[in-house]
Amino acid sequence: TLGSINTQGLKGDFLRSPSGGAAGPLLTPSQSLDGSRRSGYITIGYRGSYTIGRDAQADAKFRRVARITVCGKTSLAKEVFGDTLNESRDPDRPPERYTSRYYLKFNFLEQAFDKLSESGFHMVACSSTGTCAFASSTDQSEDKIWTSYTEYVFCRE
Image (tube, rainbow, N blue to C red; front, top):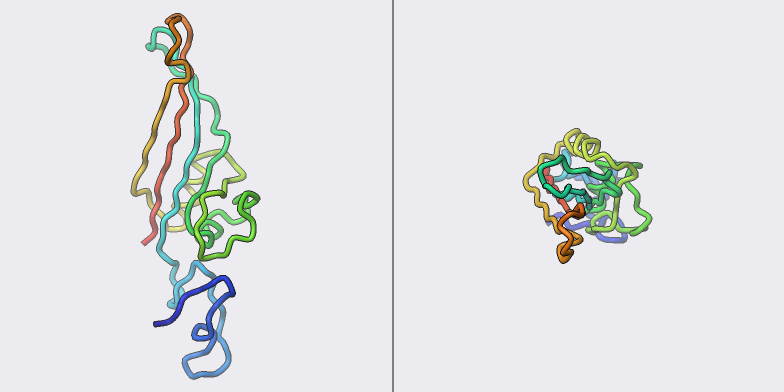
């Protein structure tokens, strides 16, 4: 086998040319040996909240997305999001390790989706949950505040 990438960098098999001479160009962790992009998954998540009026017939009032989280292999996340990826909650993470602690420096889902699409990813699954923050309230005249968590799973083959 060719070996694997560890936290010390590339193993010797990767650094020698096929003829046994000096090392060729080094690969980034998100590239395969043939120069194509590596396959993998990235999950985008966010928490949201919204208010629904008493009659539940009125339009919901949505608040802005506060933070978009990024889960997946560190090297793929850095390749896709570049300097818009905030790594402060998990600094110095090795490229081949996974993380769920990164988040984006912007808060527009469409911008995240565009970056993923431009990098060859497509959505394969999504999930959302919602709970009412004041479910035990006996006052039916109050607006109810709902919170939600939504995840989108993207794949590149």
